[in-house]
Image (tube, rainbow, N blue to C red; front, side):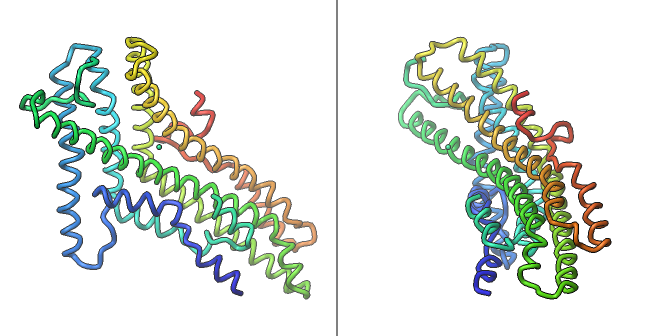
Length: 351
């Protein structure tokens, strides 16, 4: 009894709790306040914070892009973070416009059906970063940045703005990775639930008729669990499919431009190393989505086999019929799509 209480008290939202706090801190996602006054205060904070660190920084980069238009080398240098910030706007849109649906999606992670049913499932969930003095980023400002203390102020501002925007962007990206990972782990748990479905009740229930009833009820619970996983995945895809697609497109452009820039500088230079690291970060960002999306496909593909391993032979005709229906349905694996065009998988990443 105490063990069941511990498992039911597990907060599945821990997958994304830290990411949510970071996103809220950066002004991208309003917390669930109990008073209008607190909400108004947060919105004022969000407008000031996002306006100063995100919009102002992006406008500076846009102005610089216009100022250097026609110079391919300077345009590619300017466009690195500009394109990243533009695609960040798509993510901001999802959190700001669909805030209530995002909150509902987060709350649904603690459904009864998503809770672990045994210690193995509990452990599955628990186990589940020119050579002269210059500004770090290219940017146009309506005043000279070459004098003290203006240079120092803009230098610090660019570092802080880049850090804030970077952490905000990473928080949203890892939030998406966390939700995809949660779907994968729920499918992993569901596979385990099917495999141990009959053995559990045969061990605990002595009467055959009662055991058959309990097994049939367990099958219904597992099918409901599967339905909620599908609903959760569909809602997540509906909310974020555009920004995921945008991230893929922009990442391809950024990779091409960094390769071009890297061909212009010395391999031993700091600039080459910084662009190489930036390219690795962009690839890692896409890889995480593809990796966990691939795990969703793999775990989903196991459902038919897991259902077959439930020792259904001695069960009732109704049970076998319902199980067969589920097995037919589960032969179509769950896939998460970017923009509705291609699935998040390792094959997509390698392509």
